[in-house]
Length: 177
Image (cartoon, rainbow, N blue to C red):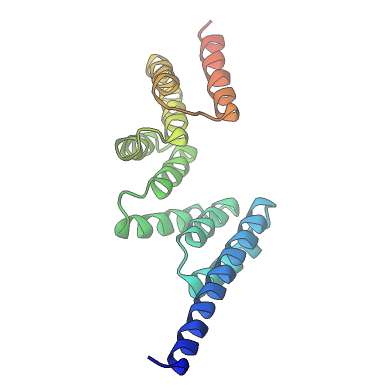
């Protein structure tokens, strides 16, 4: 082991750190673009991030941006492709469940949300999505039991999510008379 080898190792280490910082900056920028609703630019930037960093986050944003532009079939294709390689990824499952729910494909959405909860019993968005499906299926009793279970069993539910749950429960009772 000599000084030349030590310098090469140091150089390679710094290069790897720079690539990781570049990756994080790219994903943060992509997220900001998506959040401000510039879906066309988000698709372009997501493709770059996928090519450069093989980022699952970028692929997820790519699918969501397609959904945002109304390219639902493309969004579904992306999620189904992702799930072929990652069948238990709760983010991909829940996002695809949301798309199916939006389309009125409630049985498929229900299956996906239930699968998410079988993998992660604390997945708040899956509880909310499944509860919405139950309401759309006129299964209000199931929705209420699900929301109660969530409040009882899931720890550290953010206040915004609790507000959504309470609103949904109030809506169920209001519509029920």
